[in-house]
Image 1 (cartoon, rainbow, N blue to C red):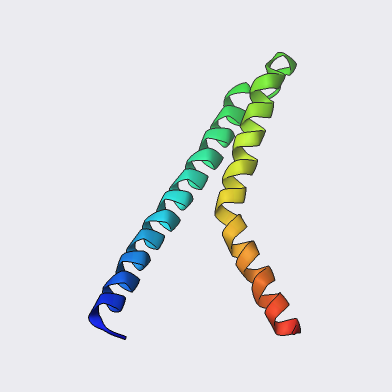
Image 2 (image 1 turned 60 degrees about the vertical axis):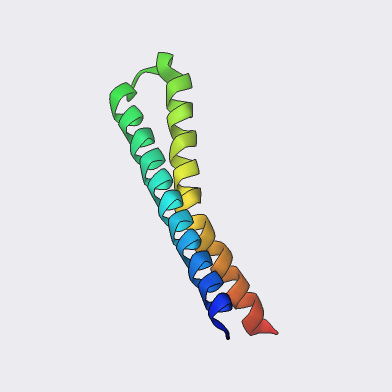
Length: 82
């Protein structure tokens, strides 16, 4: 590979690392926010909307954190089957 191609690969690698870092931080923040809301409003039936919002935040955070791993794993398993 020539120098221009190597530079492009390095730039893509940096962007991908930033994307992974941002996705990880967003996932951790959403899980933390959801758990904090659960702890604040636990046991109150009147706060059902807040609890549902917190549950959605937790599930979204988990999806952001685990989603890419699960997709990669299923793709690898599909390739192994062929």
